[in-house]
Image 1 (cartoon, rainbow, N blue to C red):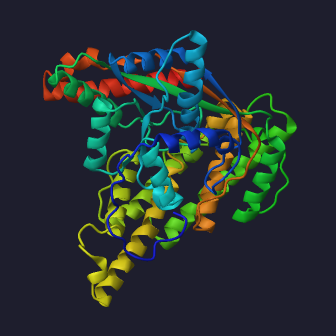
Image 2: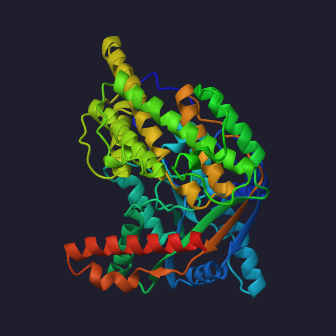
Image 3: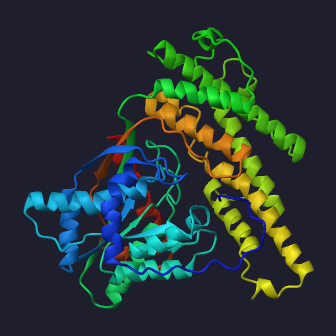
Length: 486
């Protein structure tokens, strides 16, 4: 959020979709500006070119959709906050252009409904909710329990809406163009719910989920800007200056250095590792000293002189993330169980329930003493949710991401995640990410996955339904991973 929470708030109201063709047209007109220039603190932008591949698949799907033959959902990879803008370009620019090239007449406009996280309006501003509702947005409140208002709306529009739906099945950004985070099962479940509604209504439409990959790369490798960014982060973190020897880590037998790097790139890699090691050590001490956490011992590899330091660093990072979540869970009285993403969602739900008080009919009617207590709880809840926010930024981070393929993009993604981490601690405002250079985007439309073909298995039993959702989610995960590896 842009500012820290100081007061308890009334419950978050559902923002119903109110599609407005005029607002859509204005956003379409503004799209080149939105892609290239930062209009908001939290929007990196700087996109100079978008290349869309296999768009003919979407053209065919839209044609069948408008003919009443199918319903479909677009499930897209979600590495960055600009992804919705890229999807907007794909649907509103690339699809109509490809249709014209193929001589196919589509009904215009060709937008989509899309699901967005309700909390976006808290840190981006109420204007965003107003605009999203008028260009097809459906807000979903993330958490352990389903947001039934949002899910019912998404389900109804999937079945009866004038447009298809777009959803990021990862649930949140992970900062990595080349890693797909574990998918949440909601997209697969929506597909089966839509099929169920169509079957009950004796409607003939088939239901499809189409995966869409998104990858970013820089027009020019931003090595010099990465050098300046690392210098800034070293100064902000208080990392002592030290002469770096490009061959030092290899000489010590750690074999951390990727092969075939130029001197500047090799130096940046060492500095990135050194900064990561320093931040890990500082945060470990922070949680030991001020939150009285006993960090469990790692495996023997930590003390093994032949151990791979990349693996050690990754193990330490996972231990730190677990510790940060446990601190927040202890405050909210939650059990430390499930995946990191599951734990983050439970913590978010617990924090929001303490801030946006559905249990108090009218906050203004509380006596000053009770209102003060409610505000106190809201402040403490927001403060403890910050531990979870730090973890969210590092869900997909590994100790080998850069080493496996030391491209400028992987360097930049890792450095920017570190920048977010440092910025979230040193100030409460949403980090204003530095621009490292113009970026280009490659979007790849995958082959549609037919949900209707799986219906007979899904509805045979409850156990079969659960397994069908799991299987469809896994198949979608594999499809997305394949699209970004091409």
